[in-house]
Image (tube, rainbow, N blue to C red; front, side, top):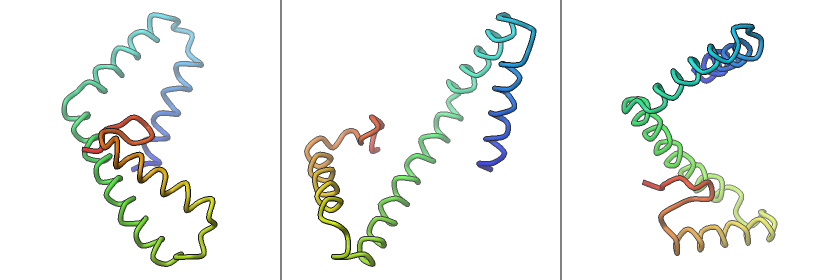
Length: 101
């Protein structure tokens, strides 16, 4: 699915950059993309995917940290601790500005 989406996006970008239809066609494509992005079904699907990604990342973190254990360099371990502390204090947003809901 990811590869199909990448291909379609690449095709659209290539068309926009290569077209001779000019600004009018670009504005039509931009309007269509905005309508798709603002569609509630698309937004809900994107948020669901983001939630699942956060869940899988959390599970993967625990599995990896259990296997890596003390072999992780202190600089990395310190960074992870600081990110945990910051997210525990803030709670509302992660490093990318998205909600943790």
